[in-house]
Amino acid sequence: MITPFDPATLTGPAQKIFTGPPKMREMGARGVALGVTPPDLILLLVAFSQCEETALRETAEKTLSNLPPQVLNGAIAGKLTVLAIHHLAVRYHAKTEVLSALLGMPEIDIDTICDVAKICGEDTSELLATNEERLLANPRIIELLYLNKHTRMSTADRLIELAVRNQVEVNLPAWKEAAAAIQNELIIDNGGEPTPDDLIFAQNISIAESLRSHGDIEDVLAVSDDPNEEEKLKEKYVPLYREIAAMTTSQKIRFATIGSPEAIMLLVNDASPLVSMAAAKSPQVNEAVVEQVAKRRNISGDVLSAFGQRPELLRRLSTKRDLMKNPKTPPSLAMKLISHFQPHELERMAQDRNVSGSVRQLLKNYLERKKR
Image 1 (cartoon, helix red, strand yellow):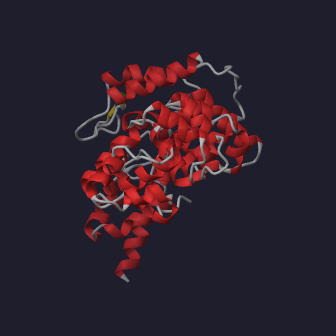
Image 2 (tube, one colour; image 1 turned 45 degrees about the vertical axis):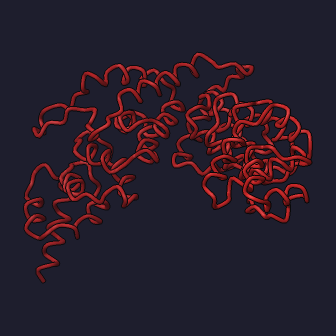
Image 3 (cartoon, helix red, strand yellow; image 1 turned 30 degrees about the horizontal axis):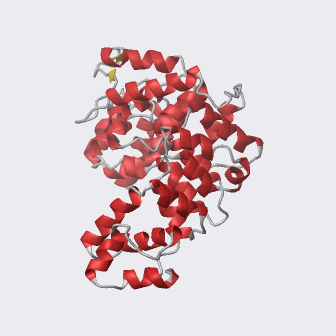
């Protein structure tokens, strides 16, 4: 855990600047601090970046993010505090030579590595993925790298395989599905270079992002009110559908976990239960996605049940109504939704032939008990 800044940790010259007159403090925030060594200067700048004075805080932030090479190298060569290491690692994670030196410091806190894993680019994620001992001792790093869109797909596969092989469970929504899929796939050592699959996966993420709706989310399928009419894929989503179809199961599961709402709405209907359930569990699923999927008649009951285990996704009454009327909705989910409707609406549902027979019987039994 990164402890808050304590002014007492500053050396004498740095404390003199930190508590000095306004002009001296301003110069210190700009990195001009006579008699202060590079490691102490980093901590002094961190102190200014957390002070209440807006101008000093902003100046120090800018200075910390644009340190001259001689100051940065001098700081790394010296003895840095845990807090100083954290601020440098987060700001300079794209400089692999700097981050590599920071990662080698015994004082580095695991929270610093986790914060870097959330935001880092491809090269840094490769660097973080090399220390297997640290990864196994801290599965949170595996989780964050897997969820980071800049991590190569092949690297994500290696991370999952490493955890499975060592019987380490990772806190991912679709961990069960990812762990099952990786055992049936060949893990290729790319020698540090991106594989063709890595490039395709990154391309598909880009395609999905380009199709992201910036207004109300629409379904990728054209769903008709006529139960005899087949649900068809909308034309603009055909290219993404084709690219997804060529993916491996592991790739689809990760795509479902980090992809756009449009990608998830394609993947919840995947023929593989591992993929469809990973899509249903995705942290990217929101109320708008569930509202669209709830109307589908060819959706898996297991997917709908997975949605039902996340109450925050079922707050819209229209979604609850569509789920009640969906022939694939399991009675266990319908039972959770019954109390949200008036008796007269439940009576109509109980007579609706589009509602599954088991749910209609459930409604009839419920209404009979209410009348007693």
